[in-house]
Length: 271
Image 1: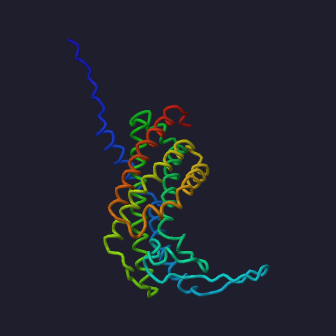
Image 2: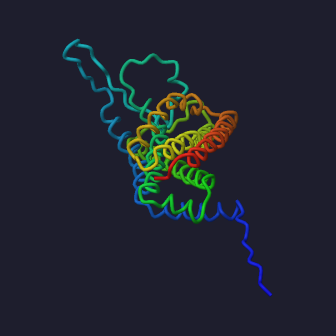
Image 3: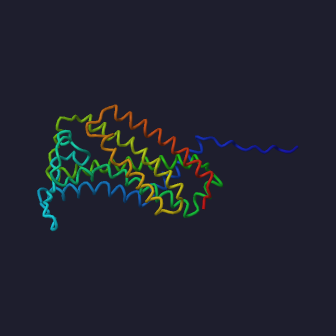
């Protein structure tokens, strides 16, 4: 009597656990991951110390004679966002901290995702993976999760660096009418908003595949379109409403753009 051959049905949960395990193991062994986390920690320290030293310095345009005054930070929380007391003030100089703050980490996460995914296609790992193990949708979900965790850790590292930079420079830690809860809500909202940028980065990366330069250019260009809205959506005075809006937006972008990324992988060549 012949024995029947049965094949175990591949379940989504089992496939995802396998994919996530592989991707997180690769992420933890990647030098790029640790370099980005280290940069996120060191950048706010260097910027805070240097801008404090340059506070009040004047530069003169030789052609017009116009003077520009560099305004250094006066409060540690300026590395995270604009304080409520400053929002209504007219700019009287160059305030670098208004642009170069923790929101830069949304662009840093794009670097990780682009290089992480492009390496999969350049090495042939993605083609082999789809042939023997994973489905396209599993790949998109796993890469989105890895990018989200990396982005969240970069935000946390930047916050620690900002606190250290403020302490080293002797800046004030006064909340200026805010509460500790507002700062916590602000950081949580930024973490959830990271999903929006990660979903865009994954979409651009799977479309460009092994072309890392195209992945980076496309992701950074798309991110810049949303960059100016980050400080509005996640201000220092964030409340639970900001957190819920960022969570809803992140989930919608992750699901919607994730489906588009899955379709691109199915309809295009893997090489």
